[in-house]
Length: 373
Image (cartoon, rainbow, N blue to C red; front, top):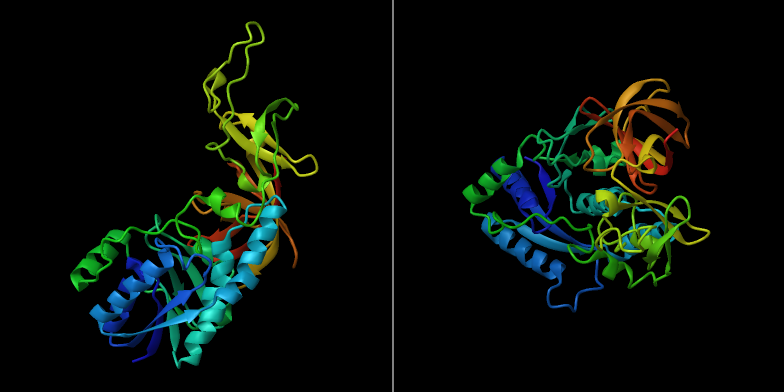
């Protein structure tokens, strides 16, 4: 029997994780990790409700429940980077950094200080092998696989980590939650950013980054509208641009309704000119500026041995993307260049590219640049 700390978030996945481990005979301690304090006084604060759910889970499972506050660490290690990336015109993925710096560093250290043998979470991923050669694998449920968000973990971190849900499909997890009588069996999955939950993102960002209005322009320089700040937009974005139709050259009438559908093609954000504070916009999902056949990444992190130059792998340049066949063109300690067999859509600086060899997650890096080359 092992002593296992389970990171209880208040959701169904972590609750079933704790139940499975207790059913297996382990000593389970539930710990709720608080990373954000700015909204504590709000009546609808999601953190407060999640903690109430954690207490209810602990009561049903008859396990000890604790709370730990990593708000300061989160501000220093994750949120400061998050804001700096947006200010630089990139689109960061805070969940990746939160896993590497908070959940599996600060929180893992805390779990071990409580005498735990392992830290378990409700992530959908699998681990196999023994340290120092453990491997991170995709979850059995491809629709829920979260290995993309875990690619920055190292051998020291995964040596003390368990992912009990990696071999289960989500409907089965819901079924087990109902079977166990867990009060969150029907609770909706959270889809918001790890520390702010589900809320209007631009409204949240405006608290910390003031508006910086500028023009929305076509690649040819034609002004199509105004934006309130480049940091509020990401490549591939369609909704929220608010671009009206292009005027017909002959009669001066609008060529489309608000939302931008002249010629039947919607508008997308395709680039940012930081020097001129311009958002580049194009028409049509398949516009060449929205496609990249190569990308360059830095801030590299490999779970085991790094990939080999000239070798074929698959990669994700964003979480919901299908695995895309690729070749590692060049790789060094600081930089990776990947060429895709087929151009990829809206490859975005600041996001992560994660490489796979079959089901094995090798690691990856932060996208620095991309292009149709």
